Amino acid sequence: MEQVFGMELMEHFRPVFRHFFLEKFPDPAVWFERRLTYTRSVAISSIVGYIVGLGDRHVQNILVDCNTAELVHIDLGVAFEQGKFLPTPETVPFRLTRDLVDGMGLTGVEGVYRRCCEKTMDVMRTSQESLMTIVEVLLYDPLSSWTLSPEKRKELQKAEEDHCDFAPSNTTSDYLDGSVMPTENAALEDNVNKMAKRMLLRLKQKLDGVEDGVHLSVSGQTGECNM
Image (cartoon, rainbow, N blue to C red; front, side):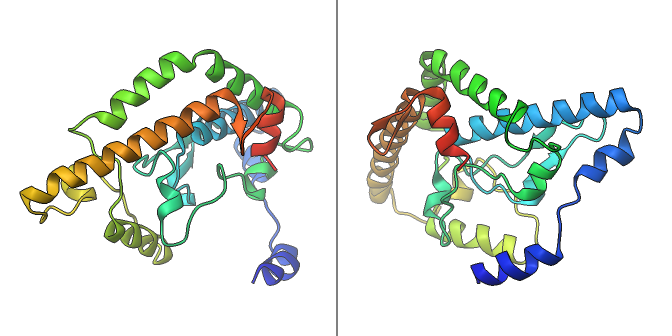
């Protein structure tokens, strides 16, 4: 399947997103500014999405502001690497397809994009104490459930395959089976807490630049994400 996609489909269907900027912003100065804004927004959202483990990044959840050309992400219900537990696991750190790269111009992921990725990573590392405090509150908040039940995982990807809109809410009844008995609630809550601790540990590793047990520099970690 990968060979068919790489050798046949990609050969016949070329990315054309660069034409959006040419058609929408005919003035050269505005065109340059909007493309620069777009490239920076892709870089920032990519690194932030990688840090918080944002998943479910299909084309219906990534929008473009037609006035500023900024990338806008919606439907943030699958976070903290929950995408890895879907029936078809999401293994990429963030979505960076050739269509997204096509809008960046000739330099692609080099130049502005890479420098902005490194700057964003550096800022997040410097501010990791504040980030960890905020995320810890979200993970342990009893009023907000961010874990996906097996049923919801299947439903989520089935909706994508059927090209349907699926917007998981942040209510406990949507994510967790509301039919559990009271005696099961304690075990379920304990499981969520253990998962929250694992996610916090993984988040801390990312902010420290640790990948597969190796401590990486900002540029090294950024390069690892974009491979």
